[in-house]
Image (tube, helix red, strand yellow):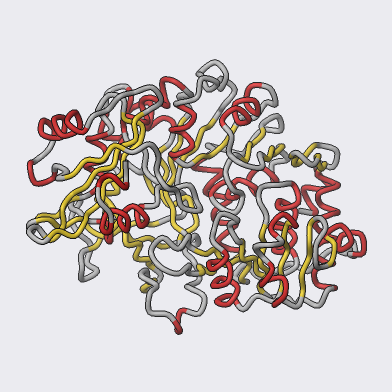
Amino acid sequence: MSRAGARFADRVAVEGPEGQRTFAELADRVTRLANGLLALGLQPGDRVLDLQSNSVRSFETDLAIRAAGLVRAALNYRLHETDWARIASDSGARGLVYDARFQESAADLIGDLPHVVVIGDGPGTAYETVIETGRADLLPSRSPDTLCGLHYSSGTTGHPKGAQRTHRNWVSSMVNMTHDVLGGPPRAEDSYVHAGPITHTSGLFVLPFLVAGARQLILPQWDESAFVEAVSERGATHTALVPTMVARLLASADATAESLAGLRMLGYAGAPMTPEQMRRAYQSLTPNLVQYYGLVEAIPPVTVLNAHDHARGIEGETELLSSAGRAALGVEIAIVDEDGQQVPIGEVGEVISRGDHVMAGYWNAERRSDLGKSVVEGWLHTGDLGRLGADGHLWLIDRKGDMIISGGYNIYPREVEEVISQVPGVAEVAVLGITDADWGQRVVALVRPGAGAEVTEDAVRAHCARAMASYKKPKDVHIVQDFPLNATGKIAKKVLRAELEGADKEALS
């Protein structure tokens, strides 16, 4: 940060609703905040909870905690207080930086932790006081393998699990993001708009734009109109969204190819987009689409489907549109069977990956039995099913745990979702397996029509009958007005499954 602060001193580094910081101002405030946190009594290696929504101060906090040698455990504000409590307990946190807006919900955390910093009016040491009293002395450099973050899963498959991320992981991500996702270092006139949570996929772009001296814009929360304004009026050139946000853009009258003409890259990650959604986004929003795949346990990008791949797919090589792309720089991937042996090209198996992007392991792994993923001889076993093409492209088939077994047949929900997405008027779809006395599991599809569109259950069934094998067709189809989302903006299939298992059709309509 000090290097960027000196090299790009007078350029605007970051701006949001509460103002902007030049690179020199940002470097000074980050250094003082880092020293101020240590002056409170925190020690390098201590875990610090960070409870904020997108803001310039959350941007500063992220950088300062790492610079101080502390370990940041971000609390997504959309999670329930019980999840916060589990993360606090599991991490053994000794500090908390929080926005006073969350004071009531975070009361137990505030009362339990010895070192609390508050942004706004509330219990704890005032954030600006910590900066004002913090020293401007440069902090010591950290070993690449020093732990700097615990990145907790959203809890969709059980209690949140903390993946240990090191400085080496973050540098690996920065290099791969720059080389494979951005296609090269950002230019001085470029700017990235953080439309999604900085605590998640959007935060992967902080370092690439900082080291290049490029500006970053912060939206406090997702809003289609504000996003379009950031591109059309404020000059944002790059962003990354989850597919749910892309779907909202496609439904927005404000979002057009003309209003988004300044986008040099629209990245998407966190969940797959169907080929039909990709075509619509390519034609209606921007041709500059980039997909990247990664996991909590393997900091993205693991694979990248770049803009050239998207263009090839739209222009005729349609199979590419269902690919997750090829391995990023310095990343290895392979496909293995149940015994850990590599399978031939084109066969389905579990995706494994190794490289500097793979976590250092789970925090408190020895005390937990619900971790699911493992690292064996440096290879992370992802739990994702996929196949590799001869040219290195990866096709993700589905989550290993999401595979439906009905009447002895294996059915991949993503494959069924891609077929249903082709039905005119369908905006989003979720397919999952529900317990069935006769079949073991039955296939159920939930479909959300686009704004003003009419989609019927019969139309979905008829299309599936024409497009897929009989055993893959959904036994039940529900038309829904919206989907529950988890803390990272993905469709919460765990919630849907619980509702379907315990409720009748009317409760979902």
